[in-house]
Length: 227
Image (cartoon, rainbow, N blue to C red; front, side, top):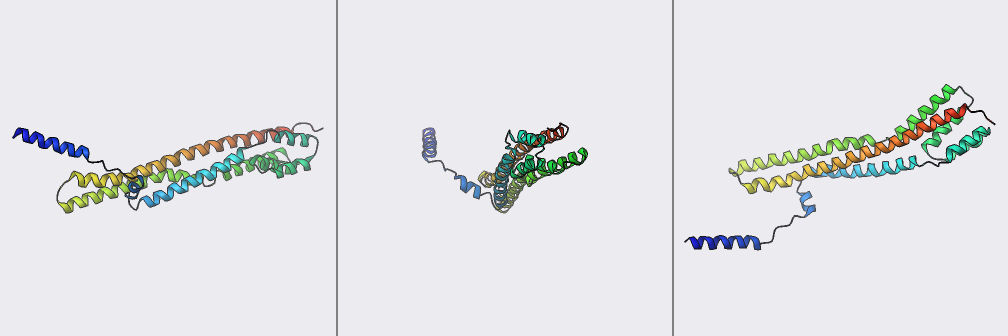
């Protein structure tokens, strides 16, 4: 009898080992997350679009010709105000627009010029930060959507248990792992948006420093004697 039990156990174990493990398709697993995956998908697409669009815009704004300010200084010191203004207008960068505003105010009190330049710098930074707040919002709400999906799944699991009137590991685990997909997806989307938000803000800080440095150089230029 003991020998027969051992043989049956060995055969059962061999059968389990021989059976191939069911593989989980990643796309199918995402689809099992339920309807809550739709807003998470939308949030992921929006966040990627915002990150790419803002990155290209901020990168373009941060590219400055190292000789640009020197050329402006040379023209202004030579009293070629119109040439300096045309050079600033023909250069499509925040620094050029800042200098254009200052050059247009030449002849007025320095305080007024300084105020105009400062306000232009703030406006340029505001343009760079456009829609960036939405990325921060996505970083906050995406994990919440994921948790909501998981909670809805858990509620459904316990409802099914109440109907079945028994507790089965398969009944619990089979639904729970599917609903945990929403939490994982929400966290991934939130982490990506969070990283993108802070990375883009660091890029804006560098552009802001360039604008402030240029504004200081321009105001100092007004006090230099012209030729």
